[in-house]
Image (cartoon, rainbow, N blue to C red; front, side):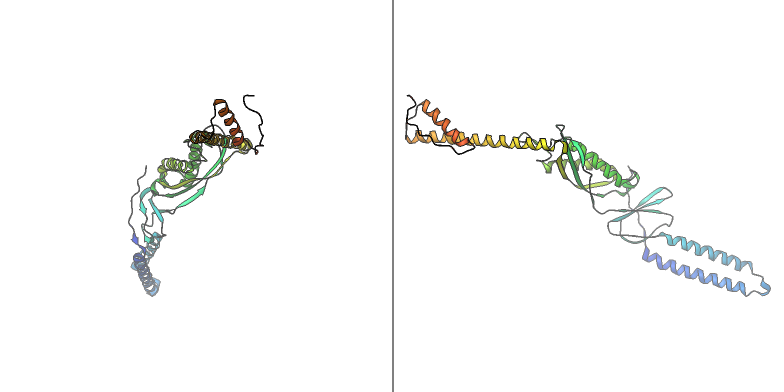
Length: 300
């Protein structure tokens, strides 16, 4: 992997006036030689004047080439410098710079970026098709790796993010069935943390740091959404019934204990069973119980 290192450059504000003065001086010298050549008798131009004009003209061209070395950097921006295919370092200091005019300067933004992945259809841990998407917040940390170790780091981030999202979604069920089971819907923070860790592992070779990764969309696929909704409703009804029965049994036990402790009435096993049955019917029924007056006896 390519190792990034810093490259120092000259201040553009210091080099600019020097080049301007040299250009003015070269133009003045060239004008002097040209004027001297135009004033020679019989139209014969001395060789010294010709060479003087040639050299000052070349010097002016060199100064024009040197002027191509100026470049600027904004805050949170870097420039990767290349000289005939050879990596010469990275400039991260914002401002007006001057460097070798033959350097190729590849500018890279170091700002934080984010993007939403496309909505993907993935089978969860139980094989149920789900629709899932995520938002990824990232930025370039190593400019050399981003430029030289992958072909297109922005496209690489997008493809690897979708691959990581597919892999993470297949490791969890959409909804949990056990009490402490992790799921996509019920354990958003844990799933997002796992997704971020996997993205960091995949993208570090491209010099990219992942600052945050979170699920932005989660739903069953349309072809099973109706069936899963009915299943969730059934599970909710079963859970509610379980709590109702559990509470009713507790209330019956408390009533029997209270009657025995206060000695309000003496009940044998058969009458206790009848009382428990009546109380459970009243407490667990969906509709209000209708009172029935019993004029007989249990032993008739």
